[in-house]
Length: 215
Image 1 (cartoon, rainbow, N blue to C red):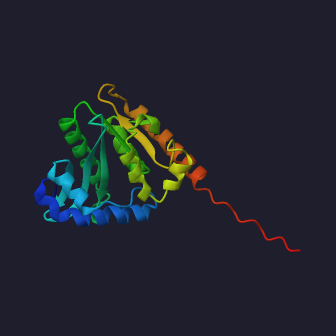
Image 2 (cartoon, one colour; image 1 turned 45 degrees about the vertical axis):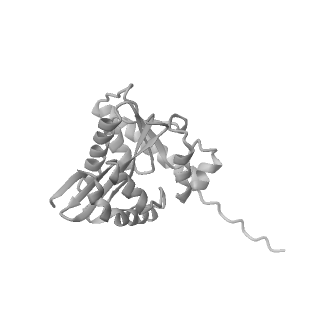
């Protein structure tokens, strides 16, 4: 594979529809996550130079974009996706690192954050210096949280008054950089994984139907 990563421009508009389909399909396969993005929204990100695309020649291999909240107080790297033909080669980590680099370059004073159910994404974020946080430390912009409405687990977020869900919140604060040893990173990831398993057991537990009582 000869995959190259690019900061997006309007020349990449032709990939917008395929990107949206890929994001939606991946969300359905996982059963979690934001399931819908519109091509025009993706094109806007490309036009503004707020996206990263991975191409194998002319073939779409992966994508990620930047969202800005509360007048640049917060920035999120969202929609990270890798085409299934290119998975298992560390491409997601390269795309995320490229998007992180772009975010730090364009918005050096912004806090970078994300919410995810993906354990591999948690590891990538941890390696970049993100730390787990409560949802109260993330943007409170209503538009961001409305974006969760297309997630199949939105009812969990609603039931918990937007304080908790299957997703884990993670934050990179440029004013509080985190320097962790490899041992500490592993310990943190082990904690993340246990926490995710506990949340799934709590929020997705199946209620067994009561047996019918015959009279």
